[in-house]
Length: 288
Image (cartoon, rainbow, N blue to C red):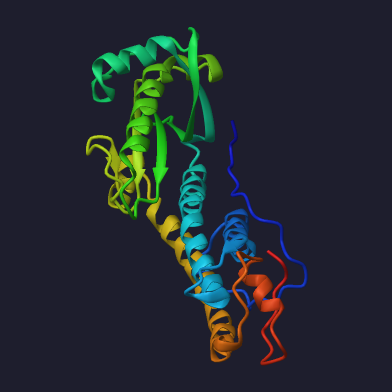
């Protein structure tokens, strides 16, 4: 269990030129900015498959953009964490593992994940597996605890994964009072579970789902400004790297007929930048 999550990043490629750092639209905590920088750097250094139709250069651009999009989900989670922990009323845990008991599992199987109500079960019985959850938020002012899964939500989550998430959240909600009493020695008035479906397209049950527009109301404090600022900073850093990549792609496309058969995998878009021939100088920034 961790009180701060970090996004896994591919090993940095040494001496890689990048564009000049971009200032965020509003003040963000230094550690959150560092995670945003790592997300973009990791997207640029990740290996990728070369599509025979696109060729190496355009495949590199596509890979970079797709990788940033995937990593933006972790940025949303980190920004939400940063927004909440600024307020002393919240205790926040990230990447929490809760052993799922056989009793909770059987109740959800027999009654469905939408029927847990206010029922509470012990968390110390025989277990069937360990549930992994993005966040537990304890609002000490309102005496409520929430176990939360966070989805970017730009597209539908496949039904099998959706059912598994709803099942595990229901089991965790049943055990949450006992789990927190054992772990932290606290007793609260209310225990809930939610899926934060940021863009609202994941397809979870309506009563379980909270979209971007409902987040401030869910927590009772403004969290959207921080999340939006973090996503704007991520977008600015992503967009700043695209023009030099497109310039290289354009140069290589001009000689496309002379290109060899594309490799099966590329070394990363930043490696592509470092391997170009002499041309217009790029502004350099320290490694993220």
